[in-house]
Amino acid sequence: MACALLNGRAVPSSPRLITTCLCVFSFLVTYLCYCALFSADAVIMQTPGDLPRGCRRASVDGGGKRRLQKSVSCVIPFDEGERDHVRALPHRNNTQSSAPVTAKFGNKKLPNAIIVGVKKGGTRAVLEFIRIHPDVRAVGTETHFFDRNHDRGLDWYRSLMPRTLEGQISMEKTPSYFVTADAPRRIAAMSRHTKLIVVVRDPVTRAISDYTQTLTKTPDLPSFQELAFLNQSQGLVDASWNAIRIGLYALHLECWLRHFPLEQIHFVSGERLITDPAGELARVQDFLGLKRIVTDKHFYFNRTKGFPCLKKPESSVSPRCLGKSKGRTHVQIDREAVDQLRDFYRPHNVRFYEMVGFDFRWE
Ligand code: A3P
Image 1 (cartoon, rainbow, N blue to C red):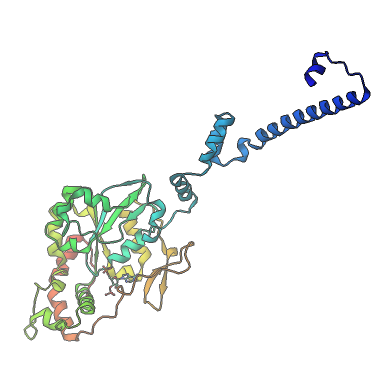
Image 2 (spheres, rainbow, N blue to C red):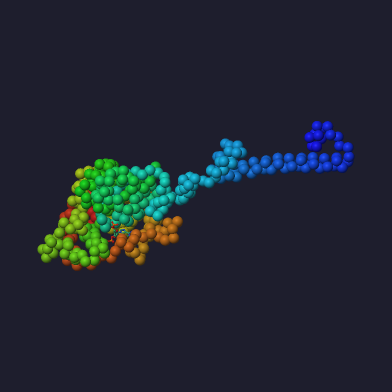
């Protein structure tokens, strides 16, 4: 009937038929208008500005069907979302706990700098303090590549490194390198430009600290004096005992100087690291060619621990002190043994001061 009406062939004769036709016609017109409006609304609602960024791109370069397909991309890919998250974060301190945030970005490269020693000198403190610098990324654990794991090859070593972005330096610390005969040559073979950091401490205190640590793991250890002296009444020190041998800094340094110039080795005072951590860290940053970002405002002295700790980062609830194994109460050693050891180390210390051009005043 509608067709007949439109063709003008059917001429309605009764008023009732005319009314019916008008109703049907107006219904059709209303329906068509509604459809037109509805589909236009749908397009208006999906303007790029209303969509998440991932969708915007899709809707800009696609038609209706394409827009629908691309709307799947409104689920932001994991990688992209993570990258945005990294940008949104304030520059983080790169403790192990926060490492996964940047885990997917940057490249793993061989270390630019290594803390090579010395055991119980304060190496953990230096690493933890320097790694709050935004341009430093560090391996948290000791890799022991240049002493125990050298056979595994440089690719293995590189795989342990944290990812670094452009401008960031990569670091690790393994204190046993300082007393490993092959370590200087091996590190130089990796790169002659590697910067080396040695944290040194009064060798007598260092030896007692070392012994205290071993004693916590091996309670039935002979006494310190039994191990330190071949004959205590004659003042004969056993320099082959590791705890004593490590403190012969001048001797070990000689091996390093065969492969690295002195300017490439920075010595941190283990004593000043406790009394003035910011001062020591300023020198470490200068040596590494970094802007001085780690300053005294990052530290406070924790009376309970008796050591400087890092102030609470914004993202954390608690301040950060080193663990219980750092800053132990030492085993008491009688005065006479300590004096004998001081006598033993004195000429070695003097030689060391001359070699490095600095008097550490270990008296
Ligand atoms: P003690 O436990 O004998 O006191 P390393 O990390 O090389 O093993 O050195 C451990 C030593 O770091 C500790 O030896 C401690 O004296 C020293 N140290 C330096 N700064 C420290 C800090 N801020 N907190 C704890 N220990 C620190």
